[in-house]
Length: 157
Image 1 (cartoon, rainbow, N blue to C red):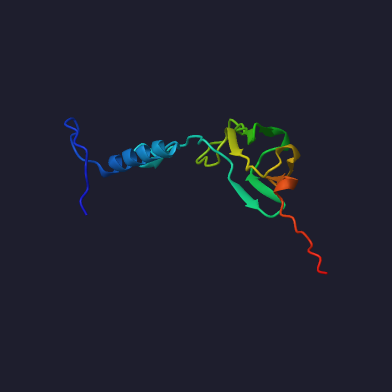
Image 2: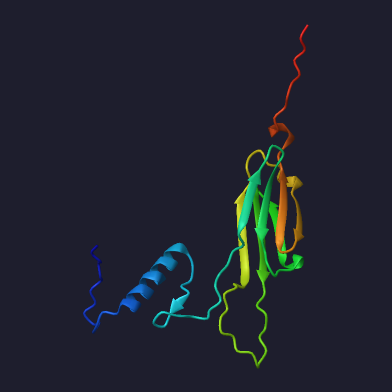
């Protein structure tokens, strides 16, 4: 397998760790994430951007959405429906460290987030309900009555 290396006339010596860091940085930029390493392969202790993970499930009556919001209070989360778009937003605040503590690793992400989802045509956005328990936001989005399948009884004579 051949490797393509960008030629830099000012680079004195090829450094595979630097090349790996540069590639990781390019990929993370392309994917919209911040690079988590630097300084010759050593992990940087930076706060990462984050967005809650969600599961979306459909049955014959409704759509159910679960969003993971660990270590967040219900008051720090906002749910809105506007023009056919369901939006979850909020902020997970960074815990202030004490002067005597020395952090060696910070992997949990903090800060503001926004997730938006276009509602399906058969969903009734005016009847969304939600509850929050154990760090998981459960949203229920019922289907409109006209979208639900109806059975018609056939009478035999």
